[in-house]
Amino acid sequence: MSTPSRATRVPKAEARERIRGAAARLLTRGSYRDLSVDAVMAEAGLARTLFYRHFDGLPAVALSLLEEFRDSMVAGGDPTQPGYLRRTLEHAVDVAHRHGPLLRAIDDAARHDAEVERAYRGYQAWFTDVIAGIYRTNIASGLVRDVPDVDAAAMALNLMNGAFLLEAFGSGEDRVTPEVAVEVLWTIWARVLGFE
Image (cartoon, rainbow, N blue to C red; front, side, top):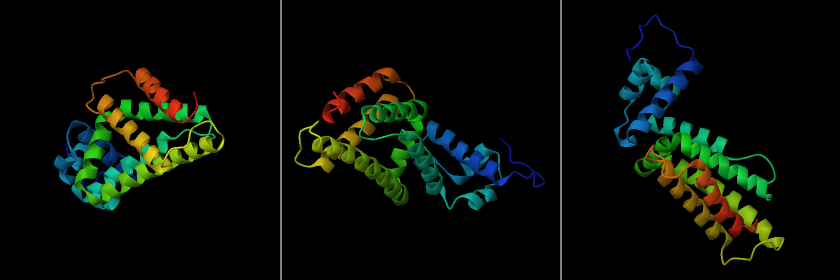
């Protein structure tokens, strides 16, 4: 794409979304290590100088994409009910199915940038806390046996979920169908959390 002339004005919100979209497309096709501001702005069709009006750097773009995924992952409702868990797993599979290569690139970015790693770990810790809360509620109600460490068990479930989804959809070629992914995860989670 060519860079627009100086006379072309792009609204702020549109420019930000074009930058985010360009970064997402480039990350889907390549790795975070290969990403550059020049490449993002060329893909967006915008002047390089506009980048820093919207983002402090490439980590900020990756973080904005991660935040969008986080917001789309959680279902509404009571997290202690089976329907909540099922909808959350369906959302997670849907996001991974539609954006697997991009999620893999953000996972890669977390290995190469301390700021992205902190945010990524924060996201993982947040979802682990959600799972631990469900676990504790179900232990208290007698649905599930107590475990030596609820937080460790919740972390294991969360990490299993993430690794499975990256492996299933991260290459851009589905290794399983989304329906199978949901059923596999639901079977594991429902049994562990006492919903089956």
